[in-house]
Length: 504
Image (cartoon, rainbow, N blue to C red; front, side, top):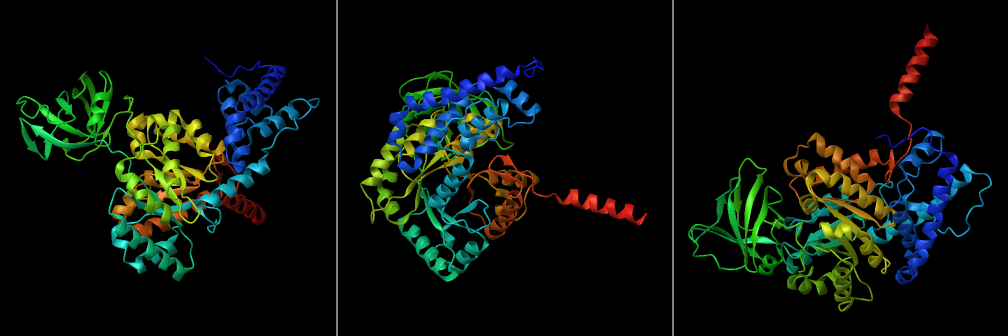
């Protein structure tokens, strides 16, 4: 079926867009209490987010095709200033249209807000408007000031400390070395600390009642997931003991289970309060060996465990004292966000709190993204991290490209800075050699405000390559809007052709 019929009516297009504009203001009024609760500096952005959500509930593909055909904006790059763009299109469609005067978020205002939010969260923009580069610090760099200075000089502007590794003593060494390096180089750098959150992992493996470190898995194998030692004497079963144990009671028959970053896919056959039986339906690795401590993802299950663990809570006083930003793992609902905010306020240090970065890595966090953004915008500063590792497992690898773009669109509508994370230039960082596909992937990071690199033995080279890619790409792209920087291939061709014609 052709969704772009040639006989679409000019007046019908105008009426649809006019109705959409009215609906945007109507829904904005319905959300007046929510908007009132956002930080004063975020109210224009929150209202624009509401307008964008209204726009994206409408079927306007035929209208967009018509607008493109007659040479007007087809609204494909209006995220940051939705109602203003719609208002301008209506004016061009009908000279008799009386423009709205209740529009706070124009193109110019949106650009200013985006830049202010980026600098407020991530620091001054000292790299020709390219995204900031976040680097995960390793414990080896904790007392190596020369290496820290190399990383800063290469282009790091945000230092990431992963609280899933090391301890506060090592973290403090990292921070002190970073501060000394900043003083020496004159380069400023924000500190981001990442809470680990609850990690669902295989605590132990028992085969025929005996504990083992690893097992080989085959398709159609049936395994037992247990929260304790209920099946340790079951001679005919392979038992995976899961931590945290209470997860087991939340699993239902028919749901999917992904193990070891999605390498093993299983389906739940039977489920009880203390154990469940799963069957392996897909294996995506040439070496199907499963070891203890490997992670488990349950995208279909309704998990009610707290996003903050006891260990996370114990780290919050340290984070409040030293960090500019705190990454929130496993967040799924606005209530999760309120919980962390309340805990941070208990340990406010020198009248400042770290900004919360919501890590989007669960299906529920995608489904609740608008609510999470509006709740987060009660604070002056906030950000989003697209944590593509767990996210890909949760939603399916084939949907990752689509979903990460949707997250970027919605966050641009809210003027909320985005951090692009997970396996960026991973091969280059680990081996010193990049793949072609990861170069292309890194270039997409230009649509975010910050790109995260993991730790690696070739980190300085990787920062330099990423810096080069982003600086080149920024001349062609502003967020998701393509811009027309002069093209060398166009100029060279025309100059050569004209020269040849003059000579002849």
